[in-house]
Length: 436
Ligand code: NAD
Image (cartoon, rainbow, N blue to C red; front, top):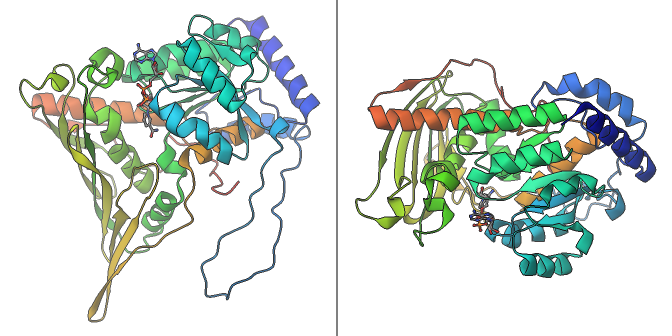
């Protein structure tokens, strides 16, 4: 993107923001840079921000011993929300993401990008997107002229993420990209550089990192609530159908079960511990002659070692009945989720001893729509000029580790990654608010 376009875009967005009373949507800081490095810009713009709404206080109905439900929500008025364009109208978009806008407090749907004109028109009518906000893939770049779009949410096959991120960034829009970020670490790196050059934010849609039960599990791990964590074990897999779908084509998917669903085992473990593995060991297997696994793998088992001494044992697959769970084995208790990675119905488990009894518990928090939480987080980052909690660097690190797992499976040897002794090295520094 050329300098004059950048400047024009930034000025136009600042003017729009001022006119609408919005936080400046123009990202002036580089995504992935330390969040505090972006604060001067945020501070300069904060005069233009509307005051964040305060929760309304209601009288307490229940006894103090009853479960607390937190403050009342604080939605932004629709015309002050951050506008999102969604690219790709497949299963995830139609079944999860578009309905989730109904539960958003900061984000709103303002545009759609699809190769299917009839489908796009129907969906636009259903969600109140004007005809001027509907684009096809060839016309995608024209989205730069749409001031109602601040963020582009890319929900295409993995092999298309790089192209649509780069084009979206060059159109001057912030990018929220589905997982896995890309097919390779090289593509992921290119996406980061393109967003940095265009001065737009890049967030990877790791919904689990915005979900309250997982956040509670993370707090238990980090605070050593039940002692040191010794092992995390995780399984995420399902029995795939049609061998002709893009998930079974290497060029569109990048790999098989590992980048699609095994990524949840990997990313959630990194999120819980905050640590990075320094050694991985993997093995992969595909049923011979199964047409689903001509190009991509079926099953991957892998282990990781972390600097604290915690070990990981993971399983992912495309040929067994759906199973999505993890368990954290700590000194004084084990806890986890089953299911852990589903859209709904997450269930937490905790088991610990007291005297003669072993207590099995199912702690539960109010369920939240994970997609609404992640989109609202992106909207907050745009409004307040913050680095997303899961920026492009977080996605790139998963790709580096997955490449090492594949290498280990190929060579039969452990693969050493550089040792990283800091916590949350690839995450934005600002914690997110679960309740908006
Ligand atoms: P899908 O196949 O249902 O939808 C993909 C969309 O891309 C379709 O609208 C399709 O028409 C369009 N498309 C454009 N060019 C295409 C091409 N050359 N080949 C195939 N489709 C093409 O896929 P999905 O399940 O919605 O997944 C989309 C993305 O979302 C993937 O990156 C996937 O990993 C991710 N995803 C994330 C989650 C999550 O929980 N965060 C869940 C499912 C999928």
